[in-house]
Image: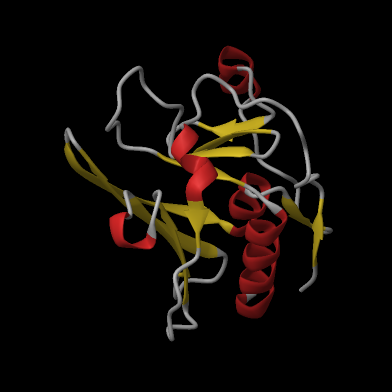
Length: 162
């Protein structure tokens, strides 16, 4: 199934207050595992501050999102399951036959374009999983700036596994 890009990954919008600047430092480690799309964040590959993976669940229409964050306040990890429509909406991709899911009240409260409490929130190219950032470093969420590179990787990965 084909996805279409509904997000401008070259946007120059400023990040929202709930997004972590570590999301600017996202890179994709080399891996031989074609069943997982892995992201890492940090200033250098040797000093990664977190990992974020997307993998297809065995059940149709479900994706596993897992993250592990290393900070001076400790290590934090989490996992959620997203439906295909939720994953595509989170990353600014959309299948032509799927309605995007959204919680308008949640989005209005956090000045976001799209989001589902406990799963993700996105303003323009600034994505947080599973929630907006708290007021301290080391909270259990992962920020990603959806660059053209990230968008292409996610689009190819999803299309391969649909």
